[in-house]
Structures are given as structure tokens and as C-alpha cells.
Image (cartoon, rainbow, N blue to C red; front, side):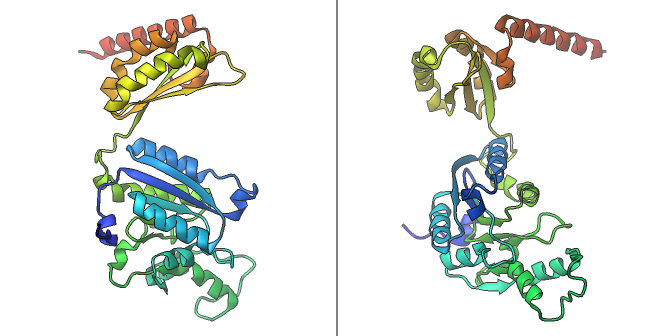
Length: 311
């Protein structure tokens, strides 16, 4: 099989994704990773099948192996962490090595950095035009893996005018993001306009999840769910069962793209698990009869409101 070019990876349809969290501080328990959870919800809402999340240390060999493998296997890959100014921020150099690319000063990033970076109160005499250890450290954040054979505009994206931090794009589908959750989230959201035309669902309707609450133990619904899964999974619907330790009820989920088909299964599933559809897992902690009464009352209210609005 002929190797896939970076330009091809940068334009093909996006149906699968992976997330690589890079950081000793996560593996050591110092920092709790929230970026992968945010990315998972982002993918779910766009209908992208997130296939893998990995957490690895700040180690060149680990990073090289992971990004090479993920770039080959998945359509859209994000990395988080390791792009700061200190010696242990090695993500850029490691990903450059993975794809045999040099690190080069990205002029647009540098200019934006000078324009938008706020002066640090403890560096009052810092001068961008004077060589210094601090300037060299800052420049590390503007030295990106660069493929001279490709359009530079496709290798660094700037989703927000008020942020100098780029999303470096390597090998067409590796998107390098910072580990700071606030920046990670803004940049991920900023990527949405760039990828919407490439989704299997260009309208970005995403994936749907229907929740059910059942008072039965998992062993009591296992047989029915096995039969249900065999019926619906060929149609792209996944069936899940999740025990809720210490709670009255357990949760069953249906996940898929076809909302109409999901809705058509509700009555059958409610009967099969002797439960009810809920809007959140905590809903199932109430009396099932009360839940049903509330649902009926809300439906009656919605109908009355709609009639009142009609001319």
C-alpha cells in the first residue's frame, strides 16, 4: 500500500479521532487531566468516533512512537501538553523527529507572540530584540515542526485573533495543543470551522445518547440487552449498561446517529428493562411512577403551550 501523503491526510473525511495527553505531571498524579474528557464530548457532539485516549510521559521515544502510530490509524489526532519554554517541554521536537522534520522559527507565531504576549511583572526589562536566556526560552514556543514541501498556512492554524498560540499541524492530521485546559478548550473549539466540511456529517449533527434508568441489577437485564445489541448494532446503535454502586437504579444507554431510530426503540427498551427513559442519570433515583407522571405532565404542558402560540 502506497504511503498516505500529509496533504491527503489534511483533506480526507474525518470519521475517527485519537487524543494523546503528554505529561509527567498527569502520570504522577500532580495534575488531573480534563482535556481528554473535553475532547471526548467535543467529538461526540460532532459525530466523530473517538477511538483512543492515551497518557504518556514527557519522553521523546514514547512521543515519537505514539504520534506515528496514531497518525497512521486515525483521521484526526490531537496532542495536549509539552509545548512550553522549559527543558521538559519536548513535544514539538519529538513530533518533528517522528516525521523527520526540522524545527524552524515560525515567523507568524513569533510576530503574534510579540504583539499579544503580556509583559511579566518580574521581567520588566525584557526586550524581544535583545538576545537573552528568557528570549531563547520564549522562542522555543515558536519553533514548529516544518515541512518545506508543504504550504505553511496548512501547518499552523490560528483559530482566535486574540491568541498567539498556534495549533501546529504535522503530517496533515496531528494537531499539537497546549496542556492548559483553558487554552486547550478554546483552540479545540476554534478548530471546528476548519473540520466541519470534512466530517461524515458535514452539518455536525453529531451522535445522540438516550438514557434509561432501571431498578433491575445488571444480571437481570443482561439477557435482554444481549438480544437488543444483536438487533441494533448492525444499524450503528451501541447498547451500554452501567452499574451505579450505592444507588437504587442502574443505567442503560443507546448511542447512535439515527435519532429517529433511537426514538423508535424507547418503548421496547423501557419494557425490556422494566425501567424508564430519563434525561440524566440522577433522574432514576426518583420513584419511577413519579418520573412517568412528571413526563406526562411536562408533555401536556408543552402541548398546551404550543396550542396557545398557534394563531
